[in-house]
Amino acid sequence: MANHFRQIVDYWQSNYSKSISRSQKYQIPEHFKKMADLMAPGKSYYYIANFHTLELELVSDSVSYYTGEQASQATIQKLLALALPSEIEKIHKKEQVIQSFVTDFITPREILDYKFSYTYKNKNYDGKEHLMLHQATVLSLNDDDQFVHVFSIHSDISHLLLESTDCVCFINLKEGPSYYNVDTSTGKFDLKGLKVNAGLRALFTPREIEIIRKLAVGDSADEIADALHISVHTVRTHRKNLLKKVECKNTTHLLSMCLAEGLFYL
Image (cartoon, rainbow, N blue to C red):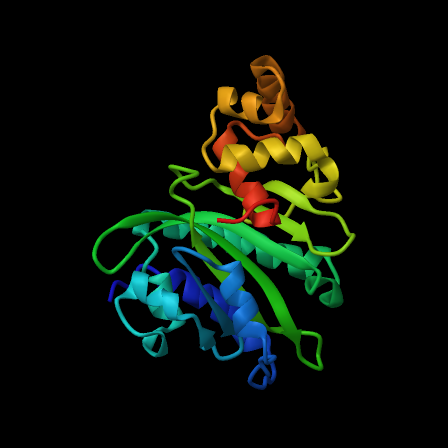
């Protein structure tokens, strides 16, 4: 097994595992797996990780597409080893920014309200490369308000993006502020220069969301115009406004953010 991923494991152990005084196995609700399967269709896999032990307490069967092994054989080390060596430093920076956000910017109880997402490239067991969207949310805190269990979904979005981005998104699952396109170059969460949003669903109009969903299935400007009974010029104007609202450079970056927010599904 490649060991380029040790940088991430060592970081998690130093910043999470060693500081967590105690943990128990997560009590998985009866319908959790069914709901998780609905959230991770296609070439996606998910797991629940215990950050005290760095063990996986639940892994979807679909992970075998990437590992070539049964879900019961998956470990956090094996899954990290799938990431391309060239992505490890980027992932490390992203994880540093997430750690900075949860320890320095929000309270322990607020951690449960957020989903963190970023992109990276991996290679499955037979050598195929994929661009993945990683989404994670904390499931439990211990009595010391330390987060223990994290639910993560990794989805293949190769049809939407060609390259991973260097940013992280912090999406509030309730009514709190969300932060998009957070720079990771310094390894620290810095609110300076960031726009605070109530969420993309609140930011976009119903018409804009319609256009996003049609862009996600690959419809052209002409096809969208015909379907919505508007001009091609109007479609293109909507697209420009969408990119401006979320400060994205291109449509594929916009779509990856909207996917993480749940504005459309794979």
